[in-house]
Image (tube, rainbow, N blue to C red; front, side, top):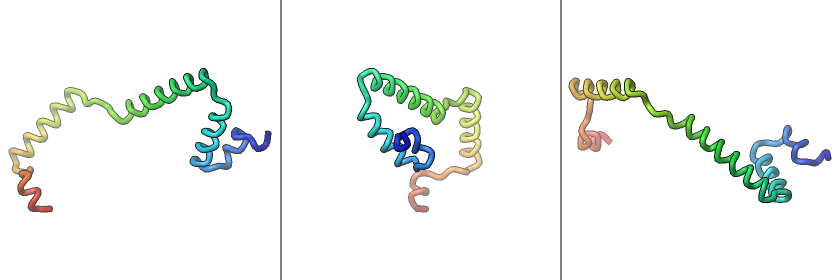
Length: 87
């Protein structure tokens, strides 16, 4: 069993591990395994999405509005036309 996917994974780079995992999965996968992996993948995607997208609180929203209004008041904004001319 020295050449198995699980034994060699510690010495391979991530891309090689992914390819070998997929090859092993295709060899042995059945409907039940596929369903379990689909569920696991969905859960991992949801976790990643939750980490990336975090809604702001009402307080943060109001602070952003206040800051934007303050910047307009202090002429710290550029019109689209002026911005285009700068580029």
